[in-house]
Length: 291
Ligand SMILES: Nc1ncnc2c1ncn2[C@@H]1O[C@H](COP(=O)(O)OP(=O)(O)OP(=O)(O)O)[C@@H](O)[C@H]1O
Ligand SMILES: [Mg+2]
Image (cartoon, rainbow, N blue to C red; front, side, top):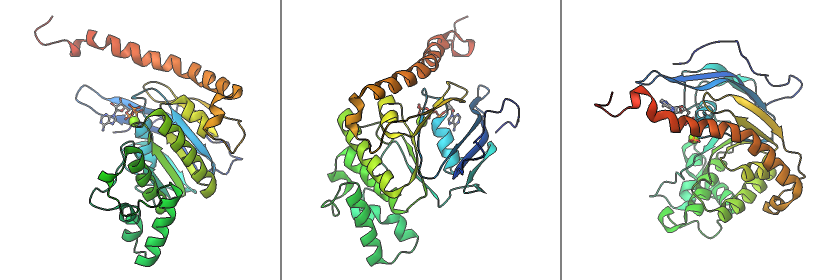
């Protein structure tokens, strides 16, 4: 259940900017057996067409909740999400999502996985194959069209998931820690790939990540969230030249951004940690039979 309030409202989108996505004063409260938790507390921001926004914040601060609401998968909130001026009330054709765990269909080969959204929207077979091949090539999987997910590496399967989402040509792409399960080198290389695709398609992209380096490498702006309840702590503009590749990571200005974001995050992360440390002292967490 969501609580409604207009007080404590954070700065909204500047009216001069034509935002394609507007998140306006979102409040999301989950009711649980021990009372409830406010996952999002008056979250407002806007994203311009073609912009790359990274969302970063401690575990449990409400990042996935935010994306699930924007993606139309979660209701019961207060506030509004608009895409191109239209208030969303469920899954929206303009929005595509890529999740932390790759979500390929094991019984379909790569071509049929990527062609799936085209199949359900009734695109004729010949065109479907052509378009699926295009996106397979874009994520660097040429030659793997007939392979099944079990015959691919984790990073390759994640790229299949990404190609499938791209194939539906969403105006806005939401990615919830898509590289979390991958090693550092693969993360960096896939980060390069995502950037290339994002620049090529001029797609509006929102990426959740725990990785500050990844956020600075990819984003035009970074939205830093507070530890519970999730609020917008700060939005940082990343004024680094494009095109960027993973090589930029070793530059000095890059290092300064990483230090700045880490400063913002450190306080929130330590609030999260001290919360976890004091948890066993709370009455309802005491082992049974103890006073
Ligand atoms: N369906 C639910 N029912 C009850 N509480 C929930 C539910 N989904 C999320 N929460 C709570 O909302 C808060 C935010 O969760 P969320 O998954 O959005 O965090 P997150 O920032 O994505 O964390 P992580 O970085 O670990 O993925 C947490 O306290 C979580 O316990
Ligand atoms: Mg999450």
